[in-house]
Image 1 (tube, rainbow, N blue to C red):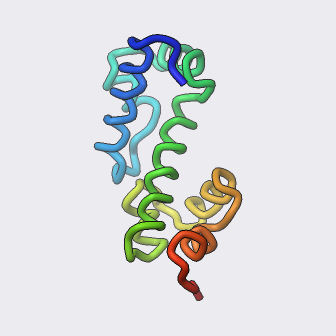
Image 2 (image 1 turned 60 degrees about the vertical axis):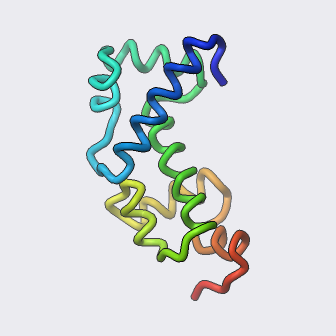
Amino acid sequence: MAHTSEDEQFLNSIHHFILQELENTELDVEHLSRHVNMSRVSLYRKIKAISDLTPHELINVTRLKKAAEMLASRNLKIYEVAMMVGYKSQTHFGKNFIKQFGVSPSQYMQQHRGIIVE
């Protein structure tokens, strides 16, 4: 995704920060911009230029990828995973998950764990 090694380091730093703050439901672009000591506008431009995502989308995608990993490999309930990746609402989590992966969290679990979810 990154164009230079500096861009890659920048994205890795942001990714690592998001993972550290994953359970924080208040994690947003403002938190991210403070972490990297940039204005929201500068952060938006930089992330958009090197990843084609907005900072908000980057946070969301990181959360959802971690959720997918957890749903596939751990014996957790969907609402537990949603909370662990920073979603206050299981409904909001489900809608975003479907938008990202094309299947519901329960369908994803069935496909990757071979279980039936009621």
